[in-house]
Image 1 (cartoon, one colour):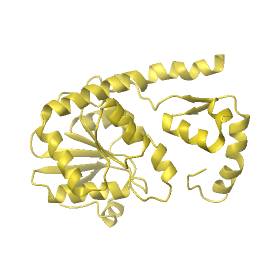
Image 2: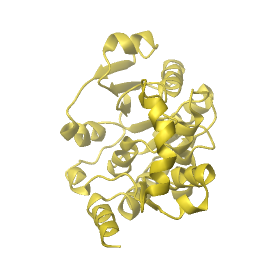
Image 3: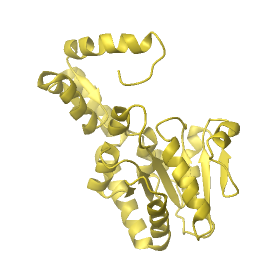
Image 4: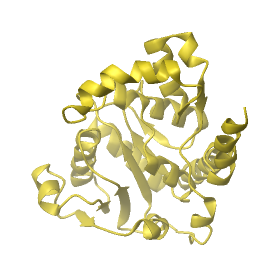
Length: 254
């Protein structure tokens, strides 16, 4: 109900969400942050029905991804739609790269038109826009040095930001490239990444600290390798689709 559905969707979501939750036998959410949110919103009786099944993809999609040695110009990659949850953090990235003292290029793979990105300030000599089919994303991600995952500060729905685990996060975990998460400190995404040490987290709304993180991942290859290793382990533990499909199916046998 904290989403921004057009009328009458927003009104209906506020009316029916509590009714649906109280009537449901099971409620599936994609992370523990969302579970905690709904427990605060509706209490222990609803929370007892919640099952966490994390966002998932099949590991086979990434089995042929080649190894990559970081070579200048270094590529930072963002993939996915761009709208209000990401805009400010992506603007921080563009500002950081424009002022950094390393040869860094940002590639944005997004369905949004170039004119929209330019209007947002996501353009420049070191920024390029691309499109690709979902099936090509493993190789697109393989052709990068850093994967970038943003969530913004001061948005119109803090609840959405705090509980989000974007689908691309799951892809990034198994992509075999180090990840920077640029998101507010109290978001579930930042907490989860710190807990599993699967990404370098920049949780201050700071261009200079983002620059430092970019330099660190480029220069400190042992750290980058450790993050990639931990990301893969986290993926196999919580995000492998063949495992999570069985968890989902088991709900119908209870």
